[in-house]
Image 1 (cartoon, helix red, strand yellow):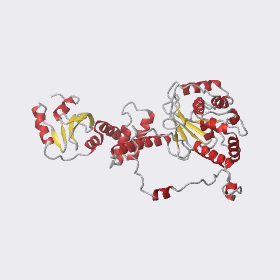
Image 2: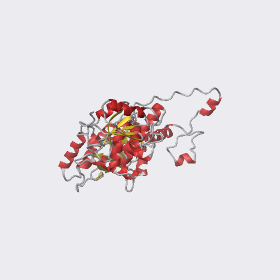
Image 3: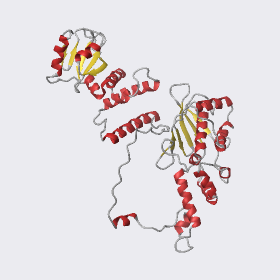
Image 4: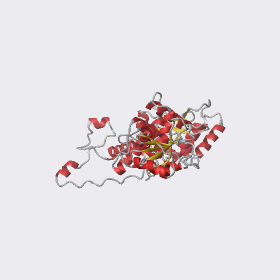
Length: 432
């Protein structure tokens, strides 16, 4: 029996939400009869077959991001012609409690149905039984944030094809769409089977509470674990599991009216996962004591500093606004962070008075190398031309800065190092 875990699917604690990672390009069309039936339910209500073909092409190109499945809803971001992906959704009606009671009885009466499900097969006698599981024409309700007025659009069609492949691999996804998670279903069917094959304890009379709930199993013989442990020495604590190779990708977060931006949630979850993994692997929090502004700079520095996409530009604007700074300050700070991390940011924004040592030795070393006498100011040495500057960081490294002559508009540049002479010579126009 195979069971989707790990990289194949991420499930919520209650089993009512599963998130499947994006698939690379080259994914084929549905191969099972139930996967094809899922696609047919959408194509039957389409007025434009061309849109459905373009949706199939989008799915095959890997344009569908992670897919989140919850009762009655399939959601994913689908990349189209614009930089920002569109949010596509497919809705289907969950089964009622009466429907589920009849379906569970039907499966319990046919053990081969459960065996087929556990083998990731969907028997026609189950799917088309007393409670039909597959949607018919008009039962799938597509929705998308794209401006296309025709529904289903190509993005919803791409999500439909991607979902069909998920149903190919695991029919329990279809049952989740109808309202019940896999673990809950298997547990309920196991209990129902026990009540049908095992006699009630103490005779044939069934207690009132069990008569009211036919899915409750009878008491099973055994002893309490605490009684066993109290009778002798406790076993040793097992060793901790190995540290994962890296942080896992977060699930896709569906958005709701008035709710948080799912892309922002994804950013926060990704950062939190990386921080948790570093803490687990090293025992040290890499961001301990990081201030609000420095943390905003760190988040922005994870995006490229040039050629920003519209999403990255929007991120920069929101981070700067939240920190009470302007976007230019953030770009400058990101440049400093990318060169030296938190120490580079401190060198940018916090002048300080270094003790006797490297700072005092730097000036005669520069003069001996043929450079003109720099202007000292706290931890900074400025070239007389006013276009180059060295700053001694609290980490003992020298950081290079450049500016237009006569303007106090210093920008960090170059790789920091221990040798001020070499660093100044490497700056633009830094020749003797």
